[in-house]
Length: 62
Image (cartoon, rainbow, N blue to C red):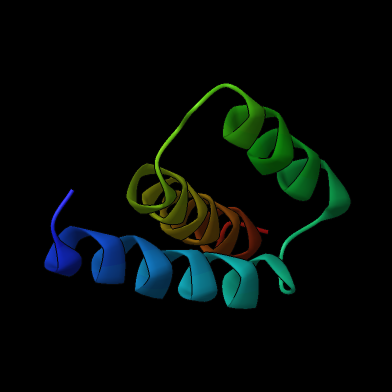
């Protein structure tokens, strides 16, 4: 794997963990489960972004 892909994984992993602090515990558990089953940091980061959009939409509908 080349340096740029390794760097991208590292950057996405840092962003992922920073964003997980704002998520409910069950999203953290989901991400931990997916990490154990070889999901990439980029994929997991996008899941967390999608969860954030969904939760914001859900709150706006109240």
